[in-house]
Length: 343
Image 1 (cartoon, rainbow, N blue to C red):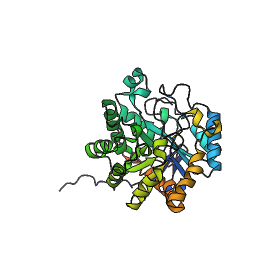
Image 2 (tube, helix red, strand yellow):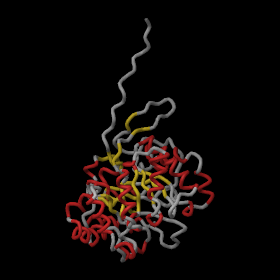
Image 3 (cartoon, helix red, strand yellow):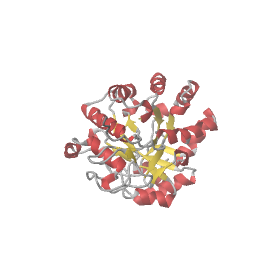
Image 4 (cartoon, helix red, strand yellow):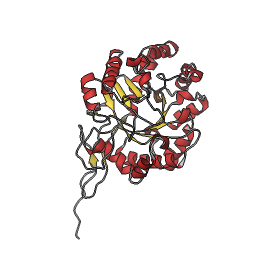
């Protein structure tokens, strides 16, 4: 009786790692983490407030490091001036670990011709930036950023989230979601985790500080998603004072392991080097305030163990024609095989 060749053993499952612009690191090495911020950003929605100065970015990282910070997750996606070419140098010089993003924001942040150009093949673009490098040769992205609308999801949001889900399945990357004014969290989970079958622990819901709806917060945490409260660098006076109560309610319900904290600096005027709160504020007055209300141990968990788990992935390389599927390597980009992406 003839037998075909025996199948080899399945490829080993790679250990979880956080993908920084200088390479993959063990999650435990991430340290105190600003889980949502921006070193570089431009948008027609923020004219004259561009984050486009590498010197100011370097100064902000030095101030953040001096305040005890060790890592920054930059959520700036494709086509919004990510400064990808600058990020490795800034990480090396500052000693701060930086994670870059692929993805796409709301349509309002792009000229129509850009959206038309990238609409087809969007998932492939995300995968390339996660596995090969931004622009094909730059640092690899370590997360996918997408966005919802105000209490709803338009056709653009649904298209980008479908592409993000496909890229997540191919790579293991986490998906971070901009919630407009903190709304629409459950709609996002219905789409990503219900229709598109993304594991809930691969979804981070951003800006929930802007909508302190404790019922929604608890439902999203119970589903298994991460909840990012990420706005102390911006004025949300109507909701900021409720943040300790919102975090306490989640922790008391057993969801302290779902909470992330970030600064979300989006304008030049908000940088600490320009007189604003900037990145250091997260670890100074903001952290002190939360520790007074919640205790230092819990707040430290929000800033260390939780982001280490949220941004870690068992990175896989998607199947390519003529190539097998296996774990990615432990260091930087593997080659310019994908479509060119803007920084």
